[in-house]
Length: 264
Ligand code: 1SD
Ligand code: ZN
Image (cartoon, rainbow, N blue to C red; front, side, top):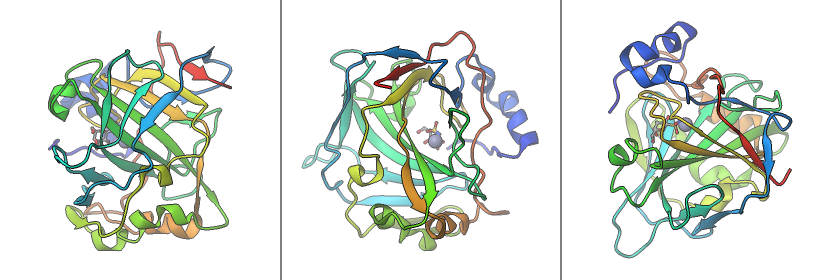
C-alpha cells in the first residue's frame, strides 16, 4: 500500500514531494459549474448489474484515510457490476473494484468535488477498472485505466435506510487497519441517486497519492440524502491519532481541461 499521507493543509501541500504526479496538470478534485462546462448530448452511462446483490465475501476496511468496501474478483459464478457508455471509448467495459467515502467533521464540508459552489457533506467514489487491464496497478498506469463515479451526499432530516447495510458495520471498524466481513446484502443501486441522467465528466486523477492521472470522472449532479445521525457514524471512526474525517483533497486547477455536462 501507499506511504503515509495526511489531509491537513500543510500535509497536502507536500504530497508532490513524495508523489510527483500529485503536482501534475490533470489533478482532481475540481470545482464543477454548469456555466463553465460544455453541454453535450452524450450517451447515457450504462450501469450493468447495479440492481444485483454483490457476491460475497465483501469486506469493509478502515484504512486510516477512508472506509473502503472491497469486492472479490475472479469469482466464476458472478460477473461483477460494470459500466460503459458516456464518453468512454466504445467497446470498453469497466468493472467494479470497490467504493469508499470522503466526508467532513462538519456538515458544511466533506465532498471532494464542489458543484456550483456547493460543497456537500460527503462524496462516495465507486471505482471501476478497465477490464483490458488485469489489476489496479496495471490500470493505474494507463490513461484509460479507471473510471470513478462520484456521488454527493446531502444532510437531511430523515435517515436514508438504503445505506444501512454499510452503516451498521462502521462501529466494528472504529480503529485504523481493522476490517469486517459484511453479513448484509449490498446492492449498488441503493447508494446512487435515482436520477443518473445528468452528470459531469472530465479527465483527472486519483485524489490520493500517488495521484495517477488515469481517471475518467463521472459525477452525478443529483445528491443522495443522509441524516445527521447517520453522518455521526462516520465521524466516530479513528485514523490512529485523530478522528477520521475531513479526508478530502483541496481543489485543483482545471487548467486547459474541458469539463462536459450531460442533460442539464
Ligand atoms: O482515495 C482512493 C484510494 O484509496 C484508492 O482507492 C484509489 C485507487 O483505487 O482511489 C482513490 S480516489 O481517487 O478514488 N479518491
Ligand atoms: Zn475517493
